[in-house]
Amino acid sequence: MKDIFNQLHTEETLNRIDKLSANSKPQWGEMDVAQMLAHCSSFQDIAMGNAFPERGWLGILIGKFVKPIFYNDKPLSQSMSTIPTILIVEEKEFETEKEKLKQKIVTFQHNGPQKCTSHPHPFFGKLTPDQWGRGIYKHLDHHLKQFGV
Image 1 (cartoon, one colour):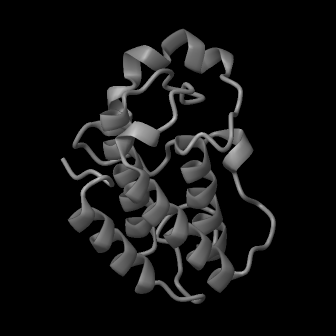
Image 2 (cartoon, rainbow, N blue to C red):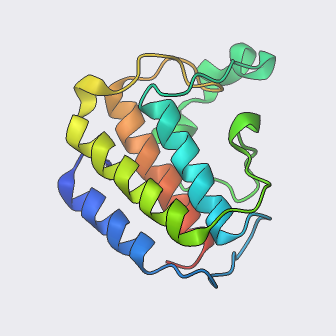
């Protein structure tokens, strides 16, 4: 399983982000490419301990039982719901969001597992740094595939 803490996997992800353009179209979903980048950036904030969305009742009820979905080697479902606080609906500027996300990925990778948040994921609950590293890669991979890169 690929892991964003691995330098090679981070470089691969950054190269894929660089292949996006402001005109990239989604193969599924409703976000445009700039909104997707902002969404992924907001998700990085959660993993880095810069944002702390509240846990919803469904996550509290079943999150720990389904959390392997986040970090196992099976692709995320195209119809998977998102954390409400990082659902981006407002217009965003592509280049700004692209650079912001790339910087957060580099910072997260550079900081390493020891600086990963210990705050629970808003749906899946408590995650180890290893689970965060695999889950972050998987989440980014999901959205990059959404836009064909």
